[in-house]
Image 1 (cartoon, rainbow, N blue to C red):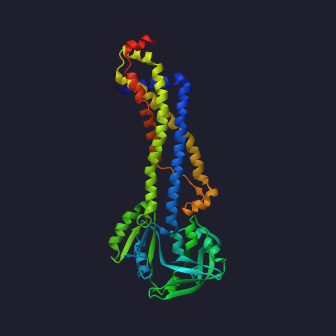
Image 2 (image 1 turned 135 degrees about the horizontal axis):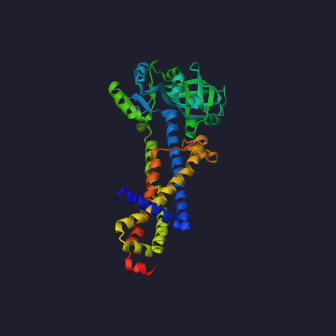
Image 3 (image 1 turned 135 degrees about the vertical axis):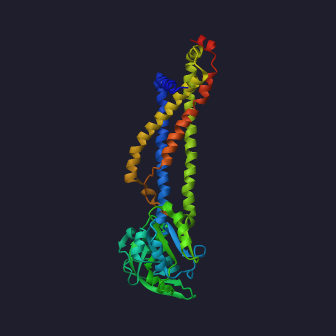
Length: 412
């Protein structure tokens, strides 16, 4: 069929839609509402899942980590590596790397005069850590670590448990590689509050030199190097380069290796949305079938005349299906037109779910959700909804094809 004929049939289909305005508007409104809800639901949930992963990466995990071989499987305090500064300088030369921070890690006990609790002691270089994670920006009281003296940075929730305030002293204890127990007194320099309740209850930051002294480690020792990349998608490529360049005694892991459940949850959500689109599509398709079938039954005499004057079955099928496809395309366009201003507002201001902040912090999300629009959202809406509308016209179009011209014209 020539393009000119198709354009002509499209014009006829467009005019046919508005012969019964009320029915067309009812079906069109259902498509518009469906697209509007789908776009906002998809972008908000995509933003929520992405925020959860991004928060974990910027809180502590980073994009790439370097350890001694076997440390990730067995994070024992004796699993450290030396010459950390040399390895850090070598890693920092890669153009994909934005920042590198060394850490000394140990599971320990933090005690005050009133209470105690198990913590993850993290020895950091404050300046380097502030470039890799945003813990320095999460302070709610006091100041960030200076890197000198026996100072400690703890979460607000942990401070409440220990019943300490700024300037109070706490005792940190942790097992050394030789089996002895190291202990040291620290003064609370600052309190932080993040989007993760577990992080605030279990993490404590001290200067890396103090952590080495507490654990009896060499002055150039580290348990891990954390890398922040310019683009998280470069992680796997950089891992391969570093693994071949670094000694065999070191292992290189990406965030996919360290937090696979969060990555899987993000990928699983993308697949789950196809099911959501299918459910909405099924709801829409029955409405479209009903409307188009009524339109076909009302116009049986007209179709009989068209068949009698020589219109082919293919052109008649195309005419009916084009009417439904036009409803799908118009409804999708209007739905997008309504959803984009709402999306733009939420992308700037966020959706404040402070009433559910406790539940959200349990997942490391935060009280304000920012939607995220991706090409997949655009593709799904503009492909699936018009396709569903076209599928809804198949049965009515089939009924139109089986019209006997003589019997149909008798009903005129």
